[in-house]
View 1 (spheres, rainbow, N blue to C red):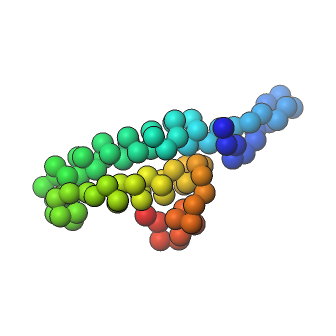
View 2 (view 1 turned 180 degrees about the vertical axis):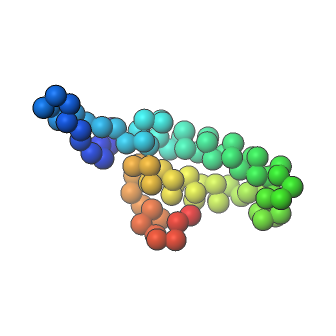
Length: 84
């Protein structure tokens, strides 16, 4: 478990799991985004933005970015100021 911080509880320091750890890691982030992008592909306003299909490459890129933002493995992509 990666730890992004500590909390004091009654004078003791306890480890606080990251959001990334708490939700189940990269696999959980990927499932969340797949559901989101599946809805985007069926939306009449948003689907055309992605040409009707959100590519696996885009889904993987955004999964990596969100995983890092939520406290998972740091990558060069999570350090980009412009986001996914």
